[in-house]
Amino acid sequence: MAASPVIIDDGGSTRIKQAGNANPDMDRLMTDPHTDFAAGTFPANIGGVIGAHCQVIINSIDKNGRVTRLPASADDPRFSLTGGQTAEIISEPNQRLEITLGSNGVLTLNLSGPHGDPPLVEARQIATQRRYIVANSGSIRKVRINDNDVFAAQPDTVYTMVRLG
Image 1: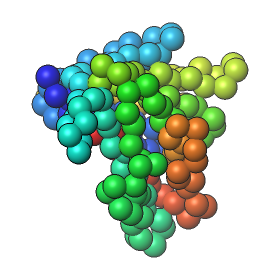
Image 2: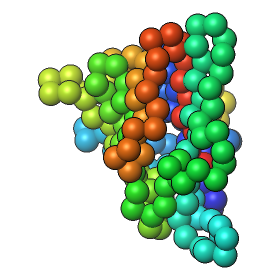
Image 3: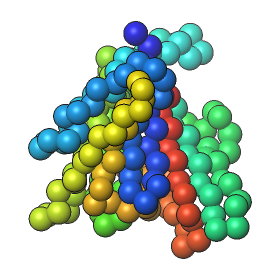
Image 4: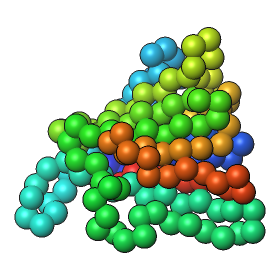
C-alpha cells in the first residue's frame, strides 16, 4: 500500500500525523522507546530508477504572515530521502524526531528528549484522523536531512510544518 504523507507541525507543541483516512496507528510513539512506523511504503519510479523515495517539504510562517517554502525548487536533492537516509526535526527544548526511510520504503519515526526529559506523547483522534502531540516540546527550531541543516527557524517564525511524502 502506498503511504500517505506524514506531517509534523508545531501548534504550541510538536504534532505528528499521517494524512488521509487510513486511520494510521502509531501508538508506540507514546511508550518508551517512542519508535513506530508510518502506514504504507514510499516507493517511487523517478527517472526510471525504482526504489524508496520520500520528498521533504518545509513551510514556515513569520509573525507578518510571510510564508517560506523549502525547497524553492522541487528537484533540490537536499530535500529528498532515499533508502537508509534520515531527517531530524528538533523542537524546543531539544526534543528530537528522527525519521529514517528504510530501503523497503517504510518510514521509521523515533522520538527522544534530552537526558531527564523524555517525550510526553498524547494521542487525539477525530473520525479516522489520529495525531500525536509531544506535550513537553515547543516550536520546531531546526530540520536536518542527512546530517545537513536545511532549515532553522528565525526569531519571528510563528509556525512550521514539515511534510514527508
